[in-house]
Amino acid sequence: MDKDVLSVIENGSKNFSKGQRRIAKYITENYDKAAFMTAGKLGKTVGVSESTVVRFAAELGYDGYPGMRKALQEMIRNRLTSVQRIEVAKELIDDTNVLKAVLAADMEKLQKTIDDIDRQSFDAAVDAIINGKHIYIVGMRSSTALSSFMGYYLNLLRDNVFLLHDTAVSEVYEQILRIGEGDVFIGMSYPRYSSRTIKAMRFAKDAGATTIGLTDGKSSPLVELSDIKLFAKSDMVSFLDSLVAPLSLVNALIVSIGLRSKDALSDTFKRLETVWTANEVYENTEN
Image (cartoon, rainbow, N blue to C red; front, side, top):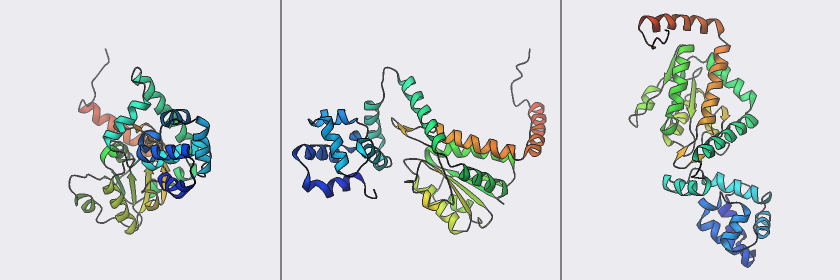
């Protein structure tokens, strides 16, 4: 469906039964909570049967209740404030075993990423990074950790890698002023999407650079600006975003690029080991 759930509900409201109107009212007013409820819990909350909730979703045109709930979750991902996220987390996470709940959720996102990743797009990204004249990497807000990690290792693997810094509105554009054809721009953004990352990627694409977008799914605003799209699942955990799957995807890119340039990689790390030893970069743990 092209329209979001609230629009679909509004368009079909004239034909709702009494029970369906109660469901519709609750979802419209509490979509942040409803998006993570089971059909049974939603029915209990509004005072109707679980089967009524399931039929409601089907009559709206969704593939059962799971289809409607997924559509709700997609709709709200970039709408929720940090305060709303905390409230949702209270419903989702068992606070008696937060450790287990968070780790289990991260494992699920990793598995979904494995199941959904497009191998051709992944290989195309590796080729583009290896062959690009200059590589520009940007990740802002929570994605800063991802971009810094990628920038650190790519700098060890090849020349002309630039990690963009964002301390002023104009600074990013100054750093990519000369970007053009033959260059590669890697943009990373996950809900809530950074408007500066999106604008910088648009600038790079308009300049003729190959754009690679690392994001969470097809509804991301990075998709339309990316020549190569790589998706890794990222869902909210309370007030923060889980970046376990995106970081694993970055790991895979770095390892693949390294394996494609074995001799250069070995030479680089031989030189680095000499420098690290001479300058006592790492603590000597030998007895």
